[in-house]
Image: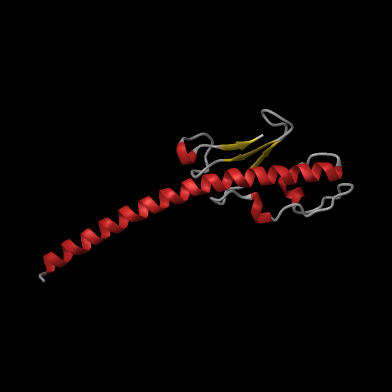
Amino acid sequence: MSLIELMIVIVLIGSVLALIASRVMGGQDRANVRIAETQLVTLAGKIDQFRMDTGKLPESLDQLVTSTGATNWLGPYARAEELNDPWGTPIEFKRPGANGPFELVSLGADAQAGGESVNQDIRRP
């Protein structure tokens, strides 16, 4: 096999690997969207538990992990790593929410507000 033939084979193998990697990575982001949706539902339940125990909403998500002296705090309600979405971006906690007393927001794969497809914000009222 000549050097040129070897280089062509290497380029072809690299192209195939790049194609496979792009499909796998895209699939991972779609899976992360589903994980983030589930994570926000679970985190909303933990906020509700905090509210039932203390009689009020937390000031920040950090209060689910560490007590700040709230009366009847029975936590921790969450682990610190649960406060980040699957892409490693902190989940936003808004009080009041657009459609309720609070809202949780994952900024999606691009960690920027807005976006489409896997970059779209994921919200849980």
